[in-house]
Image 1 (cartoon, rainbow, N blue to C red):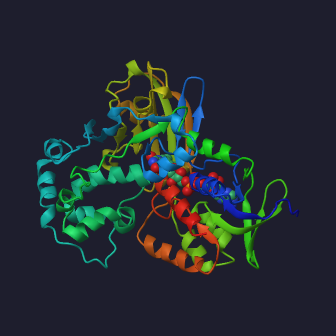
Image 2: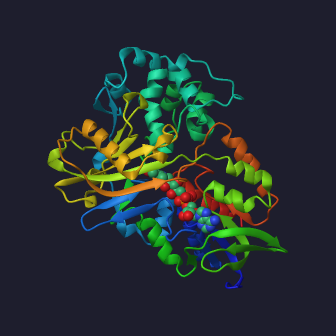
Image 3: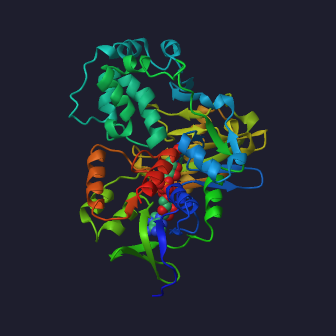
Length: 453
Ligand SMILES: Cc1cc2nc3c(=O)[nH]c(=O)nc-3n(C[C@H](O)[C@H](O)[C@H](O)COP(=O)(O)OP(=O)(O)OC[C@H]3O[C@@H](n4cnc5c(N)ncnc54)[C@H](O)[C@@H]3O)c2cc1C
């Protein structure tokens, strides 16, 4: 074992967006930082594949604007590469009854939409009359929606949406932890519809502006690559942190790789998926580690395919579509990347990304890349009315530990993690299992971790 590193103010473990943001801002504050990444590249589950003609995005297909994300982009001087999504990208579709139905964007559109039957609409409209649930009872997303708005709203609207955000199972996800703002509407207004009507307006009395959807020219991983460039040479890839222990007022980390090295740091931020944080904390705070190890991460697969535009029988005039499980397809949905960002493919072709797996379909883990690609193409042929063309496969991504499930008991698990961590001075966590899996919230947790050190 060698003492290869000088002592630093901060060691960050894990170079996904959370760890990168944390290390980047720490360095800007003038702290000495080392960022360790176990794999051969920084970025975690934000990864793009660029070939001569195509750009495929793995992980997020686009970002939603937020203060913290825009600040990071500005600080990293990446603003010039931001690519606003085409205006049509605000439209999304749901595949029901063998056709694509636009997601209604207003109550009037919802009433006219074929997404729900007249009976289901009538059931949804009596939502304000449904009594509140007792606040001590932790409900699943499925139970909450079924109780308030009926089964059809759950199956045809909420469940596909939940698979789009969490790749989750509404029967297991906690309403309080996954959609706290919706639950608050029920608690404060007695009804979602009433609560939405009473939503706070801006000072001028108008509705708050819609969050902007954007990507990056050249691929969405420009964000993480840009941060990584700023951090070089303090970013070490192929450097898994395998142990953490306390020595006096300092922390020591064992970093594996070609040769083991010891790192001494005043503070440590663990920005890994929950399971890796659990392994490192196990000898120090076993109860926190046990709670972290209990987070579920389903396998998610993304396959980017290219078709000639003329072979597609529906207009690609939106973000893409989601598929309710009741429709009998394997894909969870599909994003129309080149409709959103024209630089993703030549204009006479369309690059689209199909999603499979998630918490409601564990079978993808055992299926080969070829089988999944065949299945994705079969499903897309049906939905997009594609003629006999075979697609060009641009990239496939298999994520094992990408989206943590905010299942029933999530808040208790976080409280157990927190309690133990309070006994470890200068060790903090950040990442997608703390606030929400969105990139903005990952960055927000990095900022909070840093501010507390
Ligand atoms: C398919 C998919 C679609 C998504 N879509 C969106 C979207 O549209 N909008 C949105 O906002 N978000 C989206 N997300 C979520 C978002 O991308 C993630 O929540 C976020 O990127 C997670 O970042 P992270 O840094 O917390 O974790 P990760 O990206 O998982 O990074 C953790 C890093 O830690 C490293 N590591 C693990 N153990 C160790 C160790 N012992 N030592 C050193 N390093 C270690 C890992 O190799 C990894 O690089 C999507 C995610 C996926 C997978």
